[in-house]
Image (cartoon, rainbow over all chains, first blue to last red; front, side, top):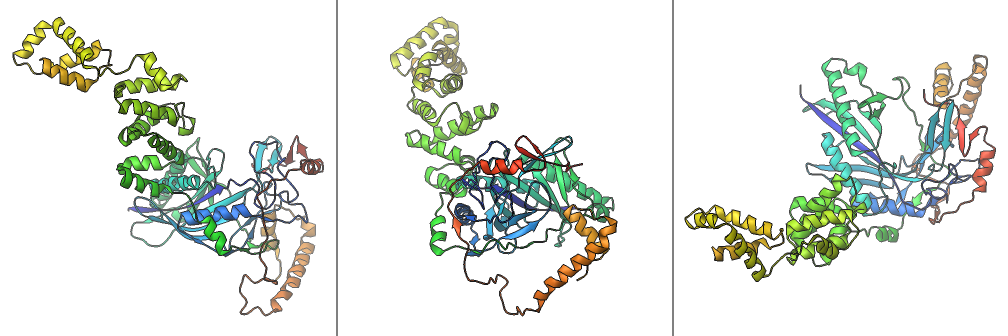
Length: 470
Length: 96
């Protein structure tokens, strides 16, 4: 039997506000344990939450970016559960009336519907030790925007494509640093299978705690396999039930978090300590003005600059890469060289060293200088690669690097002709053969001239002049 | 609504509490009494009211995103914690 995979994703984006969602505690990272806390986020009796305006604004921006409805009225609810990371015994979230609904992100094979995005408070952190657990509540109350899709994706590849697009969007509109390792972009995947052609949704399993794109893909693939095997072995009903499973990247497997009978029961009810959030038309208007989005940039690069769809997609996929590219263009460097020197040469070297564009030892100014030197034929493309390698190791200017490496391209006819004469006089036999019709030897002469010039001669010029001489 | 033994067991699980067997009957009776009292609310006619209904037609006040930090507050709370380890609260083991 052939199966269809059905995936829905929930992403928790930690908003980059200065303060928590319901109190004025800073959201700064790496502080001493529990130093960013107050009676509100520690849930002392009588302390009352007050909503952070900026978190509401960021939700409006996300809503706009994914073409969603920003609800002018939304409400908060309590999601009840007992765990030491939440001192109140409940999480304040938006269950019945979320702030954002009905958006979408287009991936290459289909449109993924975003059912809703709602504001909620993050929990604290537990560190498990022998004899007990340490509780740090610095993160408790940090604003999260949970973005939930419909069960629209049909493979782990589609899920990853959606996630990368969403990740890029939240960074473009600057509502989160979306750092996956630090947990500011966290993904839960709801995975089920069904016989191909079947319209019904079968039992979904939620996989939690996955902190990289690669692991999300592996976790989904493992879970799909597990469900298909259970179906084929005739034990689907017994082994697959609606539950939350944890992904263990070391063993590459998903594991049940609790027994079958102990289904969670969050007993949602309206948060009595908070009134309805109402957003005025002016506020919606003001925060609907968002920067150019990745797909818009991608289209503009193709239409205005004539980039290929692939190149435009690579460059527009990250905000940092796109602004790096635009800075190079501003310097007057040619588009063609800018694209290849950024996406092939620079990114290739950065990938080898596992560096992000923001950590590049060669900044946009230096890469512009290098491309301009190539554009103006001051150095050859081949020499440019050596210069770039040299710039990765040495903090010097492009001019100095070219000078040091002696790579300045020779464009001067007389200098090249002098080398050509030397090469010809050293190889009278080959010259003879060539003149007798052995055309293939032309390449040999070009090679010898380039070698004699230590690669600095302009190859086009060498070709031209050599043809004349022969 | 009455709380029976099955429901009490579920509540124990959800709340991570264990009720001693000698006290079960009393707790069941007390919880049932509380629920029955709350059930008085059912006598209010809410037909036609929106489920977002609130007593006064006002909206939430929103706060500016300005940080405030007073470490004396968490310090004094930590001092009152039953168990602490340096700056962390310390709780019984929660993962088997």
